[in-house]
Image (cartoon, rainbow, N blue to C red; front, side, top):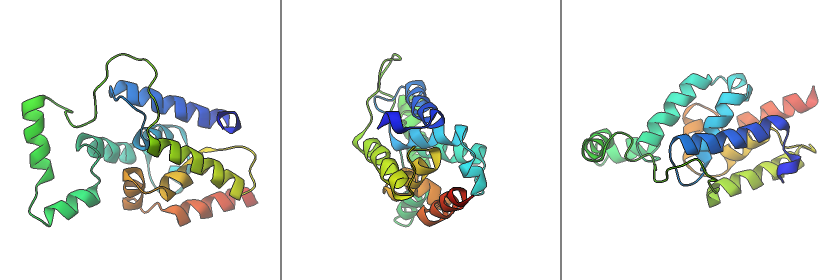
Length: 174
């Protein structure tokens, strides 16, 4: 499948591995893909989502151990203050204790099953629109289509599958 990626999308995947390495994560997850995609594509800007604002959202979610704002809001309805819990964990275990940092070194990081599902879905999305190459927009479609924290973060910014699909179709038509 990697051979069908455009050079830009290959850079996104390599960038996701770097992001995971920088965070000392043991694996590459969909949030790493989204972080790298936000740094390297204009599709998010075209959808009204500046990369720096999305990066702030992703840092906040990562700090909370992968809890989206929607998760935090739901828990607050039960009287659970997630930010307070995160602060207490960081007081005890250090800053970023919930970010998933478990591995040291810069070696290969495998993709999580969710990441593999997103990459496979990006291939299906490219095929669905008749494209021979897999581009960043196809990955963005997949990130919105596969349930998870990345889709939640994008949805909070008003970026859902239909919005991305319309963008892809507009670009394909021109």
